[in-house]
Length: 310
Image 1 (cartoon, rainbow, N blue to C red):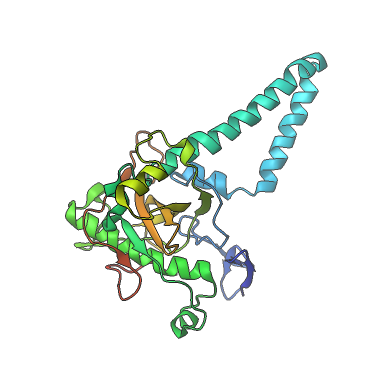
Image 2 (cartoon, helix red, strand yellow):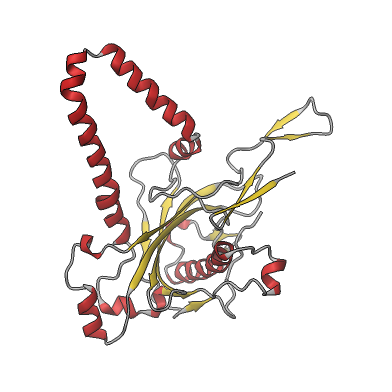
């Protein structure tokens, strides 16, 4: 039996047990952890899960991480001379804090934002790289039948099929890039419906490395009111098939969105696909130009492949 709690528009389902029982309670069958579904809320982070090591690290409870840091600090105080702690402790602590803050708020943020932020006005206006999400209507009977209970559920249920369609069109046009889109002699995209990470950040244009695409200049060149208000990034697994007993995780898909300021239901989109594994040298395929398809809207537009929804 599952318990459901709604926190900040995210539906969080907590499994009561981590094991599956047979008819006899003495026999416990462990869950296949490679296929276990993520029932927790997505992590609010720009860093994604691209290997079993990072998956294990992110699965550790924050309480254990804080306790480990506490033990490390205690061991340092126990074995380091007090004079050394007084002399080097404050500078090291302050320096670590600002280095961590600079890495996340400047370097990491800028690196991820540039994967979707258009560098020219042509890219900003290209509807091939845009999607349209319809506003949430709680009176819509289809939302009730499909279990869509809030704006986030509505956003996800519309967005994932649109991404599936764009990925399939791109794979057909580019002859199955990375070799992961073929399944039973058909081109398909097999995204999970469970998001691993999801984060919304404001646009900080002062961090962009180029000056030719400032807000004022863009408005003067296009005579339109193209402005981006929010940067959204989320990630989810890409599997080899639908069967949860035999499927394998092939890649991690990272989705980058820029929300339009005057039309908050329209987004510029780009997608990054990273092979899932432990081997070094894995390269991410960044799709920032879908080349065809026009504006993809959730209204009257069906995906070319089904989203896995267990």
